[in-house]
Image 1 (spheres, rainbow, N blue to C red):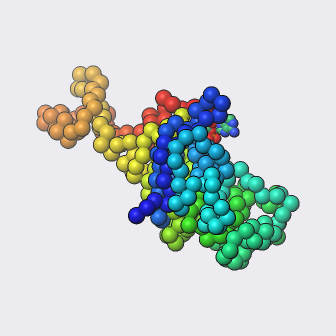
Image 2: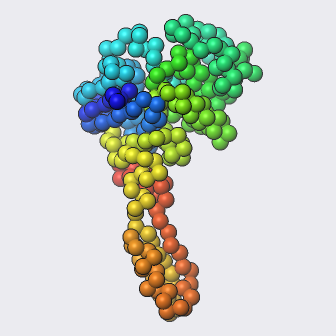
Image 3: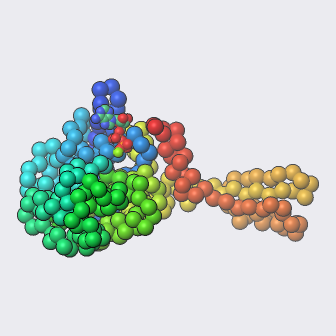
Length: 282
Ligand SMILES: Nc1ncnc2c1ncn2[C@@H]1O[C@H](COP(=O)(O)OP(=O)(O)O)[C@@H](O)[C@H]1O
Ligand SMILES: [Mg+2]
């Protein structure tokens, strides 16, 4: 199966600053891939190169089999884009923006269906400029979905949302992927990546520092377990081990109560923070 997205050796510089350094990335049909990383990691540079909105310095990029830097209208017809910041005229109403964008696609989705899916029917006749942040973002998402895309790009789709609005948007992303669309999203929320993505790519300082199943990211499930307790003498005890059951059995054999006993493993979040920590560019 050929990938819907195939990136190899992608490099991007702004003057002397290297924003992306030899990045590889693939996405299979219907797959949801999250590019996770802190501000300045290079997420927007990467996604906008894939959208055909920024030029690259090196590497090969294929989206739907074509190079985005040279692809034409037939390619654009199959792509949905949610930019990090809205580009919709604030004077347009939601319905007007949908109507305008509909003309760009060969087989646009009906406006009523989109308004309903995105929970925007009640504000359809409000100007986008006066909507709440969450409503504005959902209007942007509606515009990204109009053309029934085969590949959908979402740059930080839920930043600044309240928890309910985030869950609603996650649901729309899931519905879109379930219908066969490949989704590439960027986020700096670990929970969003874990919730939505089949695969997560962690970027920091323009490099991929980890990639894989979000549940096993960075090998955190295999990481060492820490056992802590206080000896009867009052001495603190701490041990890191990959065989905690055996280690603990040694100490419980005596039968004495182990004060303040705890057995802990690094959380996914702790692993993520350590992955980006040393390269965290603010
Ligand atoms: N148009 C630009 N001109 C110069 N530097 C840029 C430009 N866009 C991004 N950068 C720099 O490239 C790096 C990556 O930025 P960006 O791709 O926006 O990352 P992210 O989306 O992960 O926050 C940052 O250091 C940023 O300051
Ligand atoms: Mg960004």
